[in-house]
Length: 70
Image 1 (cartoon, one colour):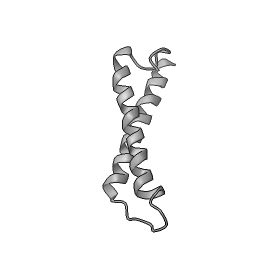
Image 2 (cartoon, one colour):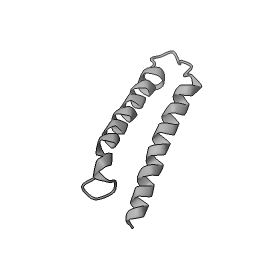
Image 3 (tube, one colour):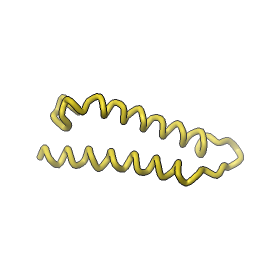
């Protein structure tokens, strides 16, 4: 992302950490919902909200960065 100018070089470490956070969200999802086993579990709403907001904010940021290039 920094090589093609999508985001400034100084944001590279931040974006790498975001990627790690998103992997963590997927792990929580897999352990609490998809990988819960035969018996469904109730996933607390704050887990779902966290995953949704984290993913959405990063999507909006990257789309806006892309728009700024064009």
